[in-house]
Picture 1: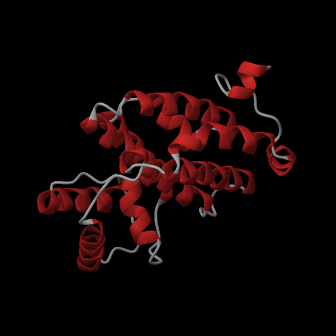
Picture 2: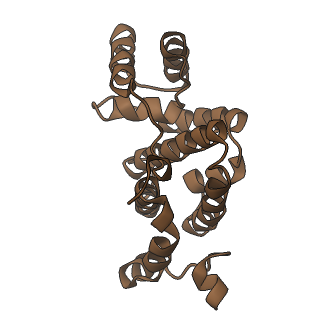
Length: 204
């Protein structure tokens, strides 16, 4: 049985209240679409109200779920800039969010080892876990972005699924990802990946 610390979901008793405030601010602004200016304003007001720093991608996801139009290139660029100022392992998270499957899979191996090393550092771990959540939100946004081609949307949905499993069962992700990359449907759709540091790489 997993302990609370084993789960990658950052604890937040005020998550519903935060989402409510995001919608209230959006209702005040009533923009035609959501981009850099809008999410940064919402970020500022959330911080004043809750002392929490939510990513541009997470804010955009809340609004997109309710049907709001998003200026995806602006949001992705804004989020990348925000994360570069906030998080360790920026290169790996960037690969996880924007890189092709090969780079994303390699980043996964590095980030899982990093997660294990942060278990005794609660503040850094909390920041790390929020970055993992935000990465999934970005991939979900990309998977539904009709400006992306079919391949890019499929890859985004695939990585979002990896992140869903990782967030729910971090201790199982190494074995699960190894099996997933070797699955016939994965290989047929995306080809064979040579993931550095994975169990398959070690055994080969």
